Image (cartoon, rainbow, N blue to C red; front, side):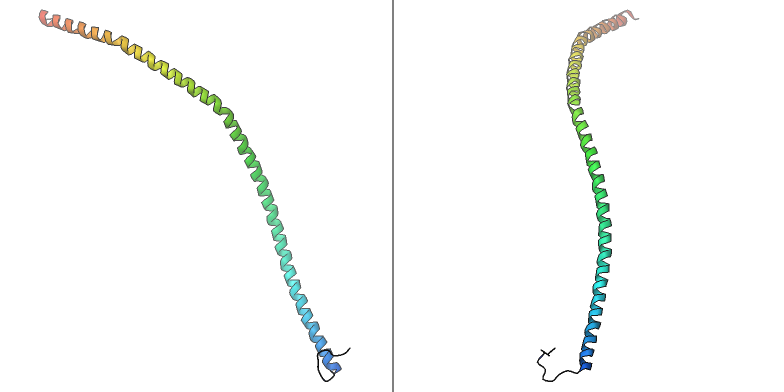
Length: 131
């Protein structure tokens, strides 16, 4: 091999071995660093996999819960129409009762007036007769 570094003198075998040894040491350190990074990445991926499994379970539970909520809302929708009809019927009944009460009050007013007149007459007779 020829030296392409532009150096004027040839390097000795010892210098070459020293350079190669240093390069091997640097490569060994680099491989160790890459191994450490890969180990950390493996742990991170394992943790991420576990987190994704938990998220999948949570999403499945959420899906079940949302389906129950949807079913409940559908049942409430089915009950709404009969409840509205029942409220309308109660309104009609209340109107009828108010009319009946009005008629009763109208019927009672002459009776109340008659009662007042009779009481007044009886009281007057008592006072005049001394009873």
